[in-house]
Amino acid sequence: MTHSIEPQDITGLILAGGRGSRMGGVDKGLQNFNGIPLALHTLMRLGPQVETVMVNANRNLSAYESFGASVWPDASADFAGPLSGFLVGLERAETPYVLTVPCDTPRLPLDLAERLAAAMVRENADIAMAAAPETDDQGQTQIRTQPVFCLMKIELSESLVKFTHAGGRKIDAWTAQHNTVVVAFDAPGDDPLAFANVNTLNELQALENAAP
Ligand SMILES: Nc1nc2c(ncn2[C@@H]2O[C@H](COP(=O)(O)OP(=O)(O)OP(=O)(O)O)[C@@H](O)[C@H]2O)c(=O)[nH]1
Ligand SMILES: [Mg+2]
Image (cartoon, rainbow, N blue to C red; front, side):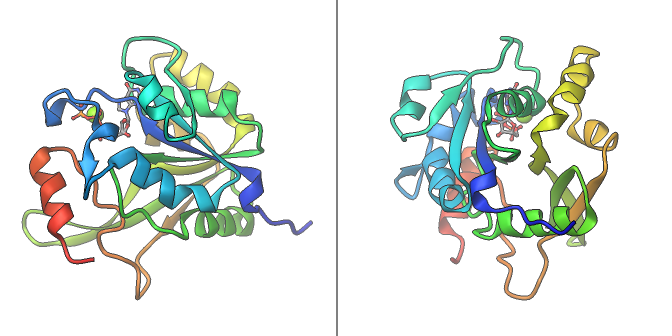
């Protein structure tokens, strides 16, 4: 049976639940990028690609609510990593698919959902994960997976509960248990900074000043 996954089948989930420790412990999603909070940038880019957007945050919930999204904190207060956010999304979503993105990648692709969804259908996969070229300190460029950019079926929530309850924290270790397709965003015309994320204030300023 051929089918497709349309925007209305997908809940976008912005992951903003981290500690922001490399930025001095600030709430990273609320830091301004070109005058607009990072998470709002993310919302503006992700929103048109999906039916609805939720935010996973653990601080300043009303600030995130003011962006017009529903906001959910982690179930436990121990900052167990991004998979805690995945779980919130899989449990709260009312669509068959959830697409996670982090709050700190303001140039994320405008065709992220479309390309992940197409690959998921084509490969009959349960999870579609992005990958993108990354240049290391030696100037070597390699395609690396971007595990926080993940489209998945909500039926996986039970599996994720089991994995995290057993102490699992690594996204790749969990996705490896399922039929996962990796989608490279390295076509001609793809923004080489689409997956550039900001962990420090220096990185934030550098990306603000990067060519569009
Ligand atoms: N829900 C939730 N999300 C998290 C947690 N830790 C990290 N994240 C999210 O996962 C994504 C990637 O994390 P990082 O880039 O390391 O962000 P961070 O953890 O806030 O920053 P550092 O403290 O500097 O590592 C970000 O979107 C974070 O908001 C957590 O404990 N719970
Ligand atoms: Mg972190």
